[in-house]
Amino acid sequence: MNSAPARVVATAAALELIGQLRRRHGPVMFFQSGGCCDGSAPMCYPDGEFAVSDSDVRLGELDGAPFYIGAGQFAYWAHTQLIIDVVAGNGGMFSLDNGTGQRFLTRSRLFSDEELQLLPAPVTGAPTDFATRPPSGGPL
Image (cartoon, rainbow, N blue to C red):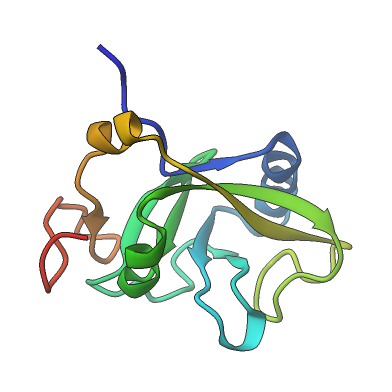
């Protein structure tokens, strides 16, 4: 039996930068930005410093760092695997990668029809509420 693919994964370069940030700042978390000031960059924060809402979707973890996305943004990207990578440049204004000379970047690939069938329902809610339940408005 095949196992479900991860909704979010990191490249070796991203894992290395996560390790550097963790050594400097302690535990970290991610939120996939949906636009506005920092575009659609994955934002890295000290764990617990970003208020996750009950409707945000927890996509998974990158080397132990929780990774969230807003429900509306997830609705657009539910059929894709997010691949977190690193490129040269400045990170988002409020993201811990800012000032390192590198920034996180989201790449993606479409899940196959077979992979989509294997994916579990998304996990929503603030960090203290990891119960799997459909977001308000029905399944995504």
